[in-house]
Length: 134
Image (cartoon, rainbow, N blue to C red; front, side):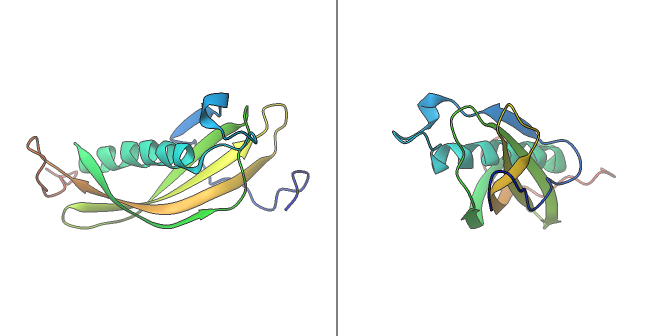
């Protein structure tokens, strides 16, 4: 894939978060650290998980993390989240990060993963999800 020909479009709707990749987040070659990108994804997924759980959640796993292309200093990173499933205490969320060179309109998917969160109580113990009927 080249920067001139985006092969896909971002998911419908607004991203959970947007951030600008800064020099402190990059290696000496100007590529953004995967750990910074993963933390942005965790923040976005955690925000959706808290809405679904109607309370505190923790990240318990990240499955199938794929880094597709690099993010450069100055790129705008948009993170989109989609609810995959819920269990008694857990929430699975598909998270995708997309980059946009700030002087263009084209966006490119840079990474994706499925994050699993667990709802917890004030003492940090698992708790059942609160349904919208409760």
